[in-house]
Image (cartoon, rainbow, N blue to C red; front, side, top):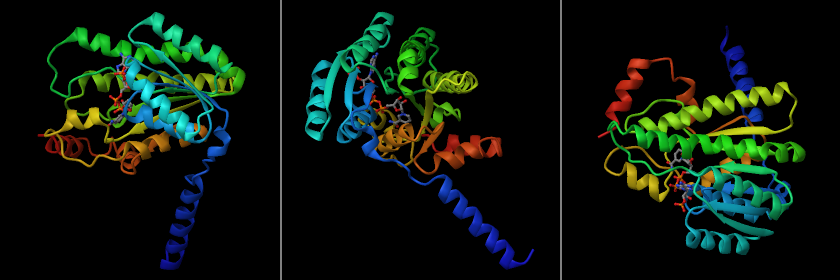
Length: 283
Ligand SMILES: NC(=O)c1ccc[n+]([C@@H]2O[C@H](COP(=O)([O-])OP(=O)(O)OC[C@H]3O[C@@H](n4cnc5c(N)ncnc54)[C@H](OP(=O)(O)O)[C@@H]3O)[C@@H](O)[C@H]2O)c1
């Protein structure tokens, strides 16, 4: 093939990719949207709440620490949220999960976006054999997501709404020091990936967006990986905007930052090389 034809193919390919992945996010479409954000007291969850607030959404925020949630609520109201309610709840409790969805429906009169973001605290370390901790983490990081999504589904069906699930590169590619956390993220991928198919097959108009994030500079993540891995962390504010934007565009999967998609794409190409590189970047 001549250079001209190859060059033309490349230009068409790049143009097609640019069109497919163009940013179609319009914050105005979120004015008055009814949004429930879990794990909203700190980190990416708080930043997600601020982006919805700027767009003029109605919010219900939940986490365990009321004093920290109150600070997030004040900032959301300053930024332009229509209303902000708080629910103090521990996602390890089935009763608390029921209460969170009921409060969201009663305060906002329905639900357009369910953002599943919270995670239970876990150490970034080698497997220590603590099966009880893994069981608890699966309850908080995985089963509570299913419970909240199931309870919200009739309301989201009515509003043609969306479920946004925060996952991780560690839920796509196994990494050291993340045995139980990684298992909970892989489980999310399996459950919500299957549910995506079933909703489409039943023509239920609810979108599910799985957000696959690399290392983000939240305080909790930075404290965990300090002195253990050497890779750049990306800003929580940008990650949160990518999450909100992907949910609004109803895409099935979102990758942030830029390197996560190609890594997932080539995951199974060079298994030995991948394992070597992975272990070398850990101390
Ligand atoms: N940061 C990263 O590098 C990174 C990378 C990939 C994916 N992610 C994903 O992004 C999401 C947010 O991560 P993050 O770094 O922002 O986390 P974070 O800063 O540790 O925040 C976790 C949130 O969950 C809440 N929470 C903790 N235990 C809870 C429980 N038992 N019940 C209810 N709420 C609980 C915390 O608030 P309270 O303590 O007040 O309850 C807090 O609001 C997670 O799903 C994580 O897996 C993060």
